[in-house]
Amino acid sequence: MTTDPIEGIQLQEESVDFKVLVFKFAQNWYLFVLTVFVAIVVAFLFNNYTAPVYEVDTTLLIKSDQSAADPSRVIGLGMFNQTKSIENEIVRLKSFSHVFQVVQQLDFEVSYFEDRGMIRRELYHEAPFNVIYDSTVPQAVGLTYTVTLLNKNEYLLEAEGEYVRLYDYMQAKYVSTKAEAFKINETYKFGEEINTPYNTFKLVLNDRFRANKHITRNYDIIFRDYFSLTGALRGFTISPISEGASILNIKMRSKNARKATSYLNTLTAYYLKQSLEKKNQIVENTIRFIDDQLRVIADTVFSAAEDLQNFQTANKVMNIDFETEQILQQTVELEREKAQLIVTRSYYKNLENYVRSNLDQPESLIAPSSMGIEDPVLGSLFGALLSLYGERMDALVSATDNSPTLKVIDTKISATKQAILENIKNNQANIEETMNKIDEGIAQFDFEASKLPVTQYQLFGYQSRFDLANSLYTFLLKKRSEAQITKASNVPDNEVIDEARFSLRRAVAPK
Image 1: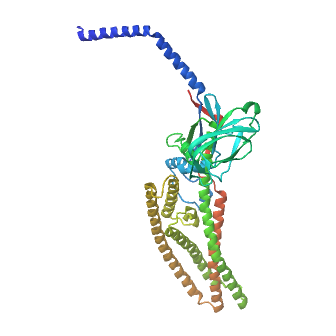
Image 2: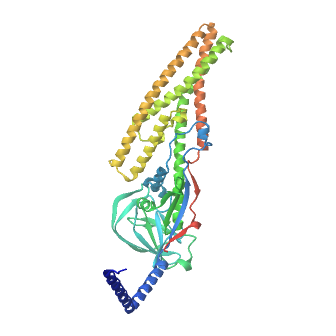
Image 3: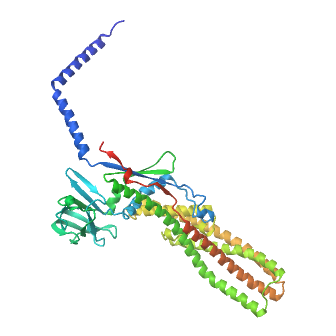
């Protein structure tokens, strides 16, 4: 077997190159040793002088369907069947508007830091003092104040900045005025109010203060606006615990595990609170609508009852005979159906007025199912409209009225409202047709009753008018009672399985 001469030359060259490499390494061995030493020192410094990063998490169960034990199902007062998707709930949890509202429930407006040599550590419920600020006065945000504790009575406050923005916490927005040149270097007493053109606050020592530990130490405080806080706090991750699962794992990494724990627990608690408030709002709308109807019909019931009693007294007749009773029972059944249709017709009119008024006030809507209207098409449209209102509210936080996103949402809202109006029109026509048939039936029974003796016929008339009004009143009372039961039994649609716990924090950096 012959050997390729070119291959032999290449092997020889590779052998020579390797020897040269070893020779060069031997000549510069100290550089490699120095490199390894520097790497070890850098790693040591990084691990010992870099603030650790922790991870905390919480798990949330997203219930896709109502439970069979849900009172709104048991009494047939389900709000509306709006299919949830895990993706939609993830978007809602991470939405700017949701996080923006969550940060306002927390005490993150002032950040505290402690300088420990090369490490600047954020404190949360750990500082030896509290900052108490006047929320009715705009505050300079993003500016670092350095606090040096001089003794148990006094501290030195230092700060310097240019073009510092002012933030109104009551209105949750920036004000037009800016602090063009800002400088402070003053000694204050604890509890003394600091009044500057750009800040109004005071520092108060708390139970964590220890003179031998905290005096002469330096601390930084920074006022944060809700917008920057929202941007910083949307950095958590959400994912199902496994493919196809309806349990979400929400994780957050932070240099302050205690603060991250408080944030995640408030994030999920507020999410559940909003869900419950929306359900209760629809029930409250239903109760308010029913109360309005009851006020209208109450006078009619009272008047009909009074007329019936006066007729019975004047004619000395208290009971109707057997034949009249038979006709009356059949009439009452028809009048009971008519009473329900009258309420339904009134609901459709109320909904039509709302849609035509172009009011974007979802809190005033009434779910059709809450009035006993089992129309899957209308229920679906109703749910879609509420969902679009939610999207619009989310978009309004970070968009202007002329933004393309809002225009798309408004177009969808208009289309949904138009579809609702078409549905109402068809249902109103069906109601009128059904009521005409019922009226024909009542007229037929009235014709049969006209053949009765005059007194019995007149008694029949008074009794039937009272029964119609009373049936309507009783139906409304029943629906009101059902709505109150639903409100008292309402629970959030979803559930926190495991809260975030500070004790279960995990160090993830440095490694």
